[in-house]
Length: 241
Ligand SMILES: C[S@@+](CC[C@H](N)C(=O)[O-])C[C@H]1O[C@@H](n2cnc3c(N)ncnc32)[C@H](O)[C@@H]1O
Image 1 (spheres, protein in one colour):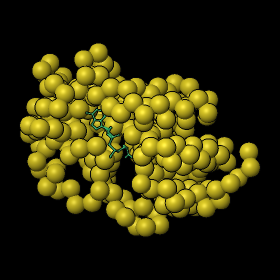
Image 2: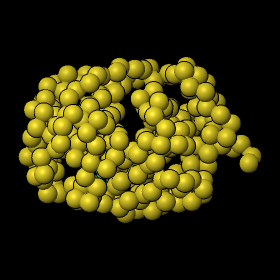
Image 3: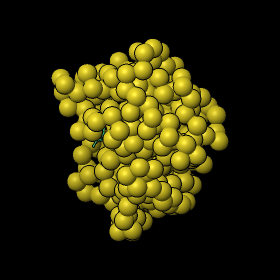
C-alpha cells in the first residue's frame, strides 16, 4: 500500500522504540489502514475526539501498546476488552500480538459495526466484536477469559465488577488508567476482595512524546467471583461496591 499518513507511521515507530517495542512495517501498515477507516467513519458518527495523526498515534495506538509488556509472555491468551469503543486498547494489541484471541465488547452498536469493518479490512483472525452490555455478556461468559482489559470506561470499583466475573481464577484484569489513582485504588479495595481479586501491581509509565502519565493497574483473580456478580445492567455504576 502507499503510505499516506507518514506522521502517524513515524510517531508509532519512533515512539514504540522509546517504549522498547519494535513495530514492524507490516504492523504499521495495518495501523495506518485502521486509522484511515477511523477518520472516514468519524465523519459519519462520533468515534473519537482524537483525530490528528501524531496525537492518534500516541494516545490511541502507543497508549494501547503500553499493555504489551503484560500480555506478550503468554501465547494463545484469550482476552476481552470491555467497552472497547473504537477498539482501544484491544485492537492495536491484537494486531501487534496476533497470537491473542481477542473479544472486543461494546454496548453501542455503531461502534461494534466499525470494529467489524476494521477486522474485515485487515483480515484478522481470532478476534470478534460483540454488541452487548458487559453485565449481560457475563451471564454466558463467566470465568471464560485469561485476561480482561479496559480503558476509559468507569472508575475502578465499577470496572472490577464488570471484569472479574469474566476472568478465570489465575487470570488477571488490567485497567489502563491516568495518573493520580491512589484515591480510586483505595475506593476499590473492598470491591476487589468481594469479587475474588487481589491487587498485584500498579505500573507507572509515561507516553513517549507528550510525557502524559499512565497507571497500568493489574489485578489478579485469586478465587471464584460470587454468582450474584455482576449485578444487573446499570447497578454496578449506580451503586458501586
Ligand atoms: C469513553 S469510551 C472508551 C472507549 C475505548 N476503551 C477507548 O479508550 O478509546 C467508553 C466505552 O465504554 C462503553 N461502555 C460503557 N459502559 C459499558 C457497559 N456496561 N457494557 C459495555 N460497554 C460499555 C461505551 O459504549 C463506550 O464505547
